[in-house]
Image (cartoon, rainbow, N blue to C red; front, side):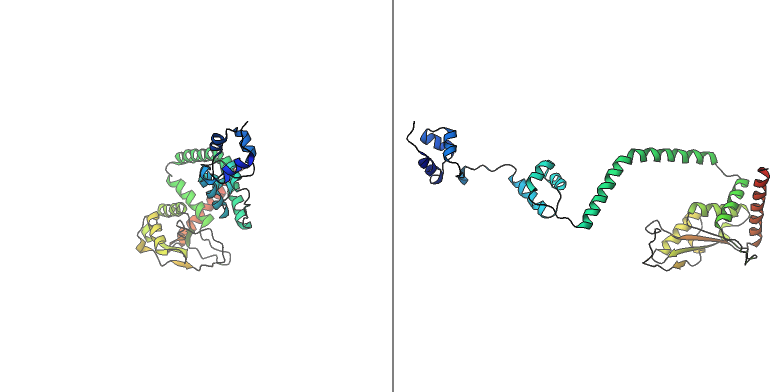
Length: 283
């Protein structure tokens, strides 16, 4: 037995700021006995060892206070989500309702993309293979093929005489797809028209770059931009939700064949012949 009581042990702790090890050396008491006597008395600052993650905990609290969610805190600090949650669970995160909806939508899209990525890759590969195989089958259009396809394209997309204007027979084709425009030009060339003699005009919204669009269309069809007529500008209405915007938007190209009444009649005849051929084949 030693002669040291709890009062003396507490004095050594509070006045002399001794550690448990130093008190044991002074008094000869056991560790557990000393801890029991010191219950409720905090350790002096000089013997406290800073915990390695105290700085990280403080950073986690600061991030939480500025509105960061637990997963983001864990990622930034390089700790597990469970550790980050324990550090900040006393700070509930109050989200703006709209921000929360956007966060949920973004998370849902991320999960959906992850789930369907493999399917989309397989779909895209199958599509590319099918397109390549079909393109290889077409190869070069012969004269008859080009005339029949071009006439059908014009009759579907080009300007036609109306019942109230039966003699308005002008060949005029308007489209935003450069492939279809090029095909139409090849078609009228096959029927004897000169590419340089056609009339070209861009129709585009005033919010877009009309000059750039003219240059782009000229490159697509292989003529000089100088032969283009002044562009038709469409008034931009901010209240209208338009999809045809951005860098890829270049309006529509109008291609008109001057003095084209007989060409129109010829296209009309080709379509009549195709219709008669379909009816004959069906008998």
